[in-house]
Image (cartoon, rainbow, N blue to C red):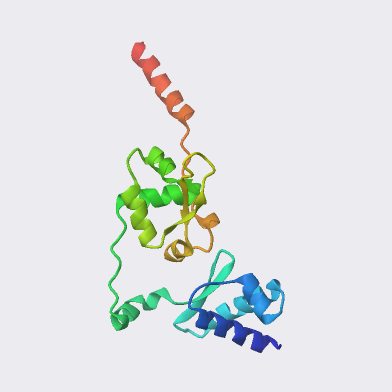
Length: 188
C-alpha cells in the first residue's frame, strides 16, 4: 500500500468511526507497523493544519480521533442546535481534580480528601462522560474505582493524564519555620 493510500485509509477509518481508534487497531487493519501509522497520522495532522481545514486529528492516550477544530464550535452549535453545556460547579471541579490526579480512586477516597459526600457529584460527572467506573477494589464490599475518560481528555485538550499541570507543592515544615522566628521576636 502506498503512503498516499495509507493516509487516505487512516482518514477514512477515523471519519467512519466517529470515535477514537486505537493505534494498534489502525496498524492491524492496514497491515503495517504502529510506527508507520504514527508517521502517517502526523503527516495527516500537518496536512489539515496547513490547508486551513475545519477538521483535524487529535491523539487521546494510544488512540486517534477525527474532530472539528474548536474555533468553529459556535457555527457547529448553531447548525446542530446544540446548547453549550453548563459549566462545572466548584464541587465538580474539585472531585474531577481528585480523580484525575489520583486515579483510580474510590468514592470514599474522594470524600476523605474533600470532607463531604460526593455521591451526587460523581454521578453527575459520570453522566457527563468525564468519569467512569474502572473496576472494583479488592477489599470488603468491593468498592467501585473511578477514573477519567477519553471525553475528559478531549474536553481539557490533552492527550494523556501525564499532561496535567503539576500540583503545587505545600510543605508544612516551611510554614512552621516561617512562623517560629516571628513568635521568638514577639517574646523579646
